[in-house]
Amino acid sequence: MTVRTIQAGPFEGQKPGTSGLRKKTRVFMEPGYVECFLQAIFNSIGGAEGKTLVVGGDGRYFNREAIQIILKMAAANGAAKMIVGQDGLLSTPAVSNLIRQRKADGGLVLSASHNPGGIDEDFGLKYNVSNGGPAPEGITEEIFAQTQTISSYRIFDAPDLDLTALGASGLGGMTVEIVDPVADYAALMEQLFDFGKIRDLFAGGFTMRFDAMHAVTGPYAKAILEGKLGAEPGTVLNAVPSVDFGGGHPDPNPVWAKPLVDLVMSDQAPDFAAASDGDGDRNMILGKGIYVTPSDSLAVLAANAHLAPGYAKGLAGVARSMPTSTAADRVAEALGIGHYETPTGWKFFGNLLDAGKVTLCGEESAGTGSDHVREKDGLWAVLLWLNILAETRLSVKDMMAAHWQRYGRNYYSRHDYEAVPTDDANQLMDDLRAKLTEFPGMTFAGLTVSACDDFAYLDPVDGSKSLKQGIRFLFEGGARAVFRLSGTGTVGATLRIYLEKLETDAAKLFENTQAALAPVIQAAGEMSELDRLGRAEPDVIT
Ligand code: G1P
Ligand code: ZN
Image (cartoon, rainbow, N blue to C red; front, side, top):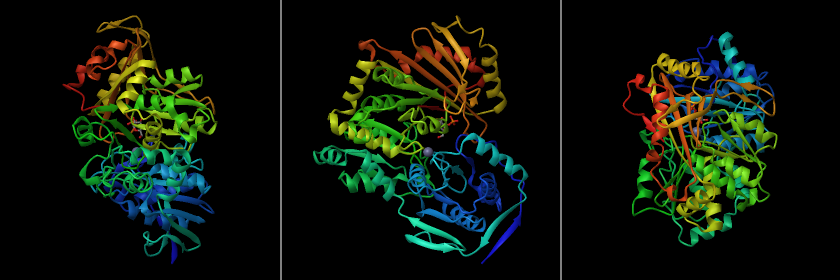
């Protein structure tokens, strides 16, 4: 076995996004591609020498092959130890937990999250740092800079390692430890939640369906929900991870998890239902006859988290991404705790969590989490919901009704326009930006703009600034529209329009969401001259 230095590069990467590098799988499979990107990561963290890293992925096509390359390159770069999920599997929150539990220097997550998988679909690689969270902008900028100048990478010439057998082995001078992907994560969940109470709930006949969407949470949900909590066998659907997620989009929203939504709206509805995405960090919450928006879910969890043992002391504060509805803010105000509004992307929560300023955080895109790890965590959100339902014995519908009656309801929806020509999308945003000083006082569809800005964030912990994070309009009466271009789309530009309307009239709390939002939708369309995109309707409504 020898270390080879291979001439390659520079590497055609991309500016760092919110979630590492995502490309078509075939691009990642090009000879030298993963290698150059990984060498750029190692170079930008001062080398892998002596480091301990966690590695695992969501099981999508090329997961195992990429892990073999990573292990051989880590060995050639002098890493001390690699902690690898059995069969190459680890959910993103489980990677975050392992980095923290084992005091590793960082970790590598192989996933394109909720994007489809397969040789013709997407793959991704992300570097997380020692707090368990995604690399901060300083490091991702450095990785990008390294990709521009890289000329070689180092790799160990060795046969592939067996990723199926638990335990430690060696590769050159490096230790490779294969771990059960579920065990440490399940132990953490057992500390945070009252498993006894949840077991009692299931024992009393409470029914649930969890759709793992053929992705990484299957083994986690089986072990925890059916194994430890006694939910009936068959509670977990699509539980075996497959390289192409059964040909679907592993994205837990009413569009891609439609069968589950249809189920809860039918007369076969279980008491509770949930789904998670490709890498296990997103969640969707459903009850008999009801879909809970992620923004509402964050607010309900904030209001009731103290019912779970891990949060019995109360919350330090709550953070939400700017486009997420303001429902959680009102809960924080009622609790007398801090609330923060950050740019889109989980990494902005990391500083607030590390500084102890917030305990819970969430995004409208189905991400919810807490200070237990430094990633959003799908199954964690499901378990917190279960713990709260086990304590209150309320149905999801009654839980939501009580919440809205107390705090008011933020009707909320996101309209996505996908694969928009990049120039057209940029033009639309630039036109809005150009008129920011003119808009206040103007009326669209009966709604008068009271304020608008291009959201800028000053990190209260490290003082860093993030500009141009989305254009937001506040209307008199508490409605809001936000325009933002996606940072994760892979074809053209994705325009996201986030629409929100606060309703406090008790007689109007149970209306159809799109109907309740109709004036805001119309106003957003008029003010952005949306017709210019030539689209009759959004591609995705969530
Ligand atoms: C999307 C979501 C965002 C999330 C990110 C990574 O990013 O909107 O909330 O943090 O995926 O999962 P976007 O495509 O909007 O940039
Ligand atoms: Zn994800």
